[in-house]
Length: 188
Image 1 (cartoon, rainbow, N blue to C red):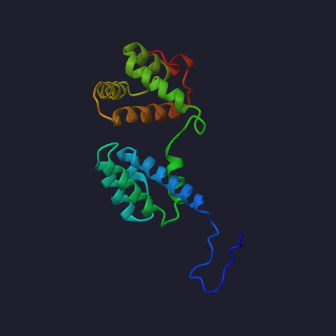
Image 2: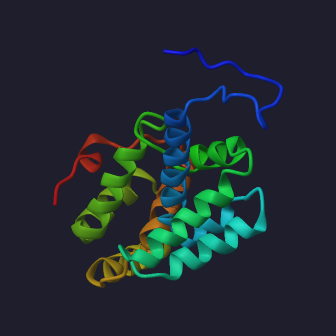
Image 3: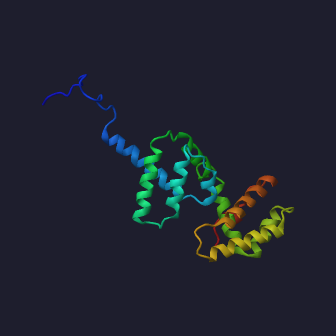
């Protein structure tokens, strides 16, 4: 077997990165594009893209039917556009958006508290307001009611549930109180 050598007469020097590595990189960028496409509207608007054409292509992809060939091809196009830029800042933005249980250990307890308030009724609301006396009970009741209506609808987005989560988080932080075990475990 002959050893391949690079001669000056060739058009390009031999590739330093293997084809398999290129494919792995392209697949990782494609998965990143799918992840960004799946974000909610508010999260999507917060992202700063390296080029406006990427944002526009993702908006088109978001408008297409789920699991369709058109969406698959559009996401391939988005990935092609994304390969032209350094995506480290975009990845940092995405990592800072989501609070996973590893990054924020109280996130799961907060989610359980929110679900308990939505499904628990007045008893759970009274238990929470006894924890923080000066919380705005009417605002909390309104947020719970909207989140409950959202839960009964077939909408994929849940902005009222998100608003309730943010309100609970802000109130607990303001009061300097931890979520008690009675409210942090799923009951319903």
